[in-house]
Image 1 (cartoon, rainbow, N blue to C red):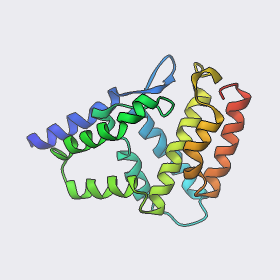
Image 2: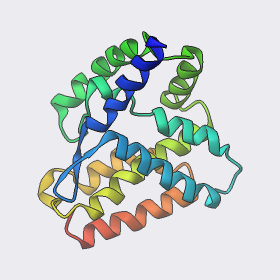
Image 3: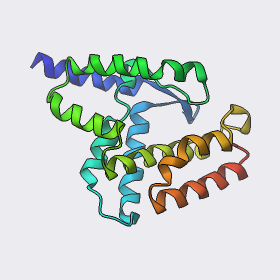
Length: 184
């Protein structure tokens, strides 16, 4: 029971991890980002041209940023943060593995997602990319001066969103919207 309580109370701290985007005058949490990704995936999965396992997608998105409990969020327009990202995340993953129940299942979910071993993992990553675009449309504090250029976003997100027609098309529409709002 103690190990279960430790796992639940430690992972709940994802609610406290601040990301670079804002929600009504405060920083978005990684837990909010994970929920948003799951909502987007649940809506978009019905538009994907091939059958995908919805539960598998949801599992990937539930755990895709769990390492941020200890590693924090890294902004991809900050080279210094990105240099340390993989080392910090590997250390965080090792710590989580010391207390998470059903470690084999957790390992399978996180490695399949990180290595994009399944179409569901590729879809989950595409959704993760779309979430940032959607969040930035709603973030009144974001502007073209934030260092997230269209070229940088395309370089980072296009390989992932291009895996599915619906995510590619939605990405292009979101990019147009961001440009119209002077956020790129």
